[in-house]
Every structure is written in C-alpha cells, then in structure tokens.
Amino acid sequence: FDLGPPACGLKAAMIDLWRKHFVLAENMLEMECTCLTPESVLKTSGHVERFTDLMVKDTQTGECFRADKMLEDVIDDLLEKSPTMPTEERENHLKVQRQADAYSPEKLDELLAEYGCKASNGENF
Image (cartoon, rainbow, N blue to C red; front, side):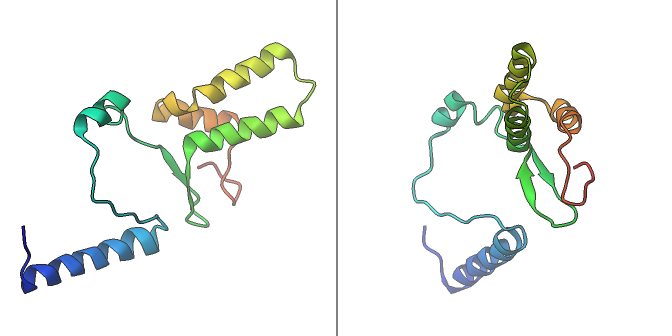
C-alpha cells in the first residue's frame, strides 16, 4: 500500500516517538528488515510459546540485564573462585546454570537471591 503526505508524516512521527523511548531512553538496539519470519518457524522454535527474556533492572544506574545470564555469570564466578569445590556440589551448580533460561520468574528470582546477585548499590534486583 502507498502512503500519502499525511500518513507519511504520521508514520515519521510515530517512528520518532518510538526511537526516543526505546532506543534513546531504554538503550535498546534498533534494527529493520524487510523479511519477517513465518509464524510456523517461530512456533517450531518455541518462540511463540515462550519468548520472554526475564530482565532485572539496576534501580541506581537504570541498566537492564537478562536475569538468566546474570545467574550464569555468577555461577561461573563461583566455580572459578572455588577450584577445590567438591565434584557433586560443582555439578549441582552447573545443572542450575544449564537450566537458567528455563526457570519460572519466581524460581529465577529465588536463585538470584540464593546466589547473591546484587545491583550496583548492593541491593537485590
């Protein structure tokens, strides 16, 4: 379909507002493509059923982080700092790490607290 002058202006204003909010204020990345992935591919890959990256926000700096990646990183640090950790305990931590992106929001919150993930001001996320 074609857009006339009023619709072009409206589209430009909407894109500008979107950019100001998401790209500038939220520090998100912008991308544009002409080819959309078919829904059947997204269903097969699991994106339709469960495509939510749980995020945590540092209230002091405003930065957002993927909660599962934070958990994975803190477990990496723990394992690196404890080379003499018993094998069974190490395996339990690795199991938690491998499943980090599959936990419910409540379980992920519980694990972040259990592993001591903190914001830059020292408070829990």
